[in-house]
Length: 204
Image (tube, rainbow, N blue to C red; front, side, top):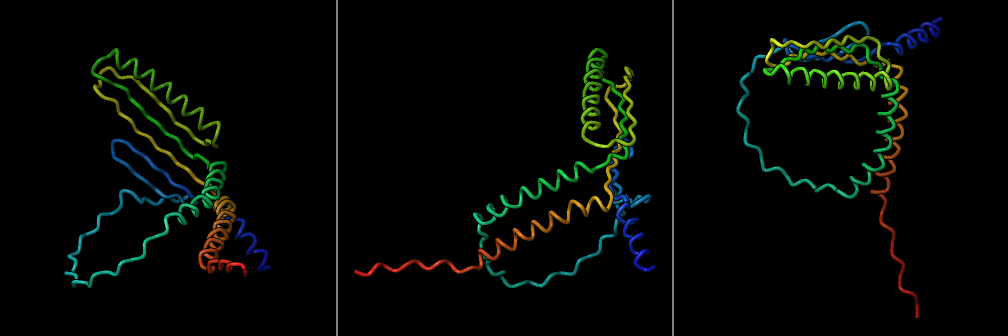
């Protein structure tokens, strides 16, 4: 019975959606984190009162740290790069766009320029929507573009919500983490191994 409950809980947790909702408009920029059906605002955050920091005592001159081995770091980066790219591709295939909202009111001082640039804007938005629909699951979209000859500058507001399930995150990240740890362990073992001894000169 207990095992069955644990299995059900794990299945429910694996379907928990985690994501982010970012938006920009007349009220400013907002960023919220999504955990299941709940949203938590992370930007702008609450302003904290600044506390006066006590005067720091003078510290002794820091010891010189050994310089990193640039060649070794570059070699390690080349080994880890395919792992990172594969993980990013895995996230991309599973990423869901929960909400795409765009409200654009185009206006310029010159009405002729406003009409021309409004047409350019429509073309760019249609190309963007075609790309997103071809590469992602787009659940909800709200796009509205208007032309207002009374305005002297454009006004834009947008919101974008992205999410993955916890199970999808684990399916992609765990194999990538295991591969990365293997590479790091192999790299560390090679660096700690003593250099091979050179063979002595042949006897005459």
